[in-house]
Each structure stands twice: as C-alpha cells, then as structure tokens.
Image (cartoon, rainbow, N blue to C red):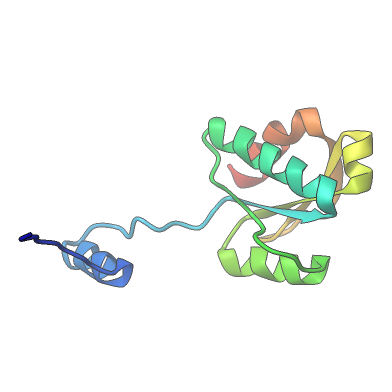
Length: 123
C-alpha cells in the first residue's frame, strides 16, 4: 500500500526556530527536585507536579545518584534552586531548599510553604 511520511530531528527544529529569530523553546527549569530514597522519589514527583500546576517550571531527577551527583545535574540544568527530599523529610513534611544561583544558604521549609519559598528565591 502506498504511504508517505515525514521526520525531523529535535536539533533541526531548534535550528529552524533560531533562524526565524525566535527564542529557543527549551528553557532551564526554575526548580530541580532531587530525591534520596524510594519514598522520597514518589514525593518528589508529587511536589514537582504541584509546582508545575502553579506555573513554576520544575524538573525531577531521573535515575539514581547520590546527592552530589543530583546537585551537579541540578546545576547543569540551569535551575535556580534545588529542592532536596529524603525519607526523613517525608516523615517530617519538610523539604530542603538550596539556592544554586547567587547567594543564599540551604534551608529547611515546611512542605506546605514550598511554593512561597520557591517564589521568594526565583522571582
């Protein structure tokens, strides 16, 4: 049976957008969510979804890795802040926040105040 098709790689699409003078559609996330532990990984996805629902670009660590590797990925992603979740923080309903650009110290905030804390760092 006769058929027709079309394929174009992502890199070529980005080149076309750049040639048209428009800004690249790929942007750095404002927040990178790092997770340490199986339970924390599930919570990381939930927190990232709630941030996205509020209009905050968030990326969750994909794959395993110790905290150092995950923070390196966060820095390479261009994110402004890393949200760190471990099994202990799940038990206490808190998250650790580490600013990645500019100044600021790592802090622990209640999970219910995550959105406000992220906005105070990224806005």
